[in-house]
Length: 307
Image (cartoon, one colour):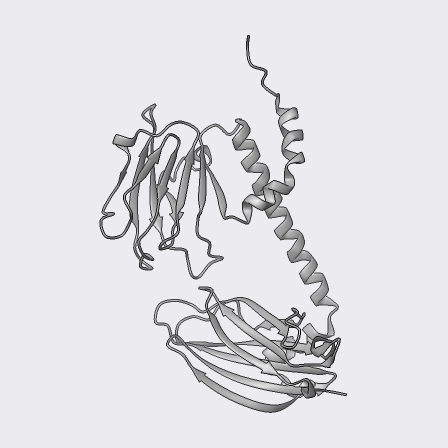
């Protein structure tokens, strides 16, 4: 008896029904490669991190005796090949310019070369935890993977559009834009405090402003790294009494700061961000840079957002 195979329309219905699980998989840094999409680029990059396992998953079984990781001694755990999967685990982070070649050979003789690289610090960096490799774009798994990618791209676009819409009508974002452009005199803020921090890779000047029902901070950052650009990854703000996160307006002067140059980040907090059920409390702000490290933290007094 022949097995029943769902047609393409049925596949799409099944995939749409699993949209929630698709988002969960993407949060685990799952990525797909369609070999037919890159006929002129035969070497595929995989981004790995020290002591973090990365799994390559194929549609066909892998030939263990013909799959080789070149120059892995002292940099990787021994390569593990199990049926359709290849497991990689670096012993430590690779250097920024380092690349380790990997050749995977399938049982049908197909060779798929990879270059193992550290995450790109100047881009929206990620570490691959699972990479699905497909030859047939019409297979169930390839269609499922394409849907996951489309859902993620669509969600990212919707979130970015919503963020831009909110910023267009937000007074706090308008004030942050003036501060980050150096036009503090055109705002109702006055400087109350100033600090200067020196780090290995960056110097940070912090200016704290007070205003009517609002407070602000401007971070002027000088990149001392000789090779990598500095980029703001994310900010975090919360009420120190309750630990609850608080919304603030953030603006950057430039997307990234090249080596030896400076740039600014402005944060504006409304008085409501200081409020808790017990009354006004302190507001903590943290800036995280491109590599995930916290660059600076400040704690603001609620009296800065004066009545």
